[in-house]
Length: 486
Ligand code: CA
Image (cartoon, rainbow, N blue to C red; front, top):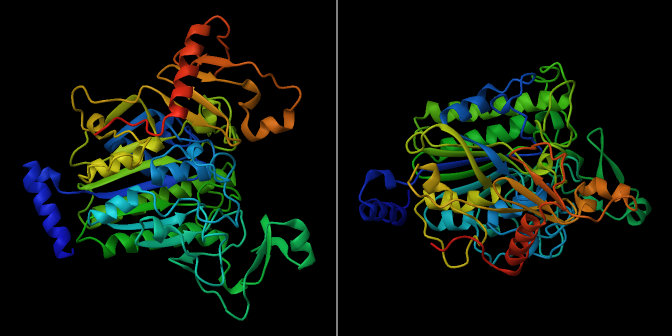
């Protein structure tokens, strides 16, 4: 640890008056397209997830955890910035997801959770999926991919630039594509006409992907090796940083499409490749837990586990990735955004189950609080600190409502029991586009405590509740900060 960081933490421990103030390591496991029902601890019986179940048994499992949006890029933006993504008008944040040629979508001037942790002496790394763009106007895959994760608070980055179904299919380390042969540069396009004129193909590594590319073959990943590669990098990061507090955002591609598990897991579930990939994910998490155990780090490591949006399928040969909930990825129905949400910190947090309303948006303020950081004014503006509630403090502040966003950028709002959807025409997210003309513009109100499957619209009978929630939504939209003051 650097002397200045040692001094900082010594002061922090002295100031807080007890040894528990020593900053924990933080491992944020942020998975892709994993639904609420995708683990044994959330009721799954046909897929085996012993390691995720262990996390739940040894930590707090939340039944009302939500991704801040129903698709990848917006939720990941909020995870790093603590800001509702729809406050930022950039394409891919207030609707849709970042294209493969998107510039960096997080302003480098913005205060971020990894940036705050880095300033506080943490070694910070993102290993896995980024999907928040590179460069000032577009990525330069043959040169420097700058600005990117390293310009918004991460000391190290290794991973997938966008998604496993987008071109180019290469790993990036810090600012460079790994293993690129300069004699065979990567050319890519997201414009069909241009791509065809230049002889580019949507195929790479044996699969049809989003976008068109050619070249860079030496750098192409093998889909079957992605999980093991990201795991190996993560284990190495932890082992390199045992002597100082670290923040690792481990963001595996599991279980985003195309579902291609590694050879050890192909066929392991007896269900589908996606279910196999889920068991692969669980095994990777098990390896990380064992790494912490092996080095005596588990007790003082805060682990958070969640997903960037709900599952994209609702039934896999009897397995129900979205549990009892309606809808799927991109939708305003619970299946689109209600996700697994587990927090384990053996030294400080008692195991249990919580019904508190929580969001992935709350993770940045929570991890900063665990690190002893007081947030600067207006930093992480929509992120609620869950730590007091996690520590079991009496009268701990709790989130009483939450705004949700579909894949099309439409919003809904829910409190502990009720959800208000301003226009049911928007509730199906990406799938709503296919039903234009027949969908209804009327609002929906659902009581999730009595009707978890969102089958009974309580409008117009409970118009007063709808009006209250609509006003709360408008108020938060007009505000720039919605978190409690510190
Ligand atoms: Ca996702």
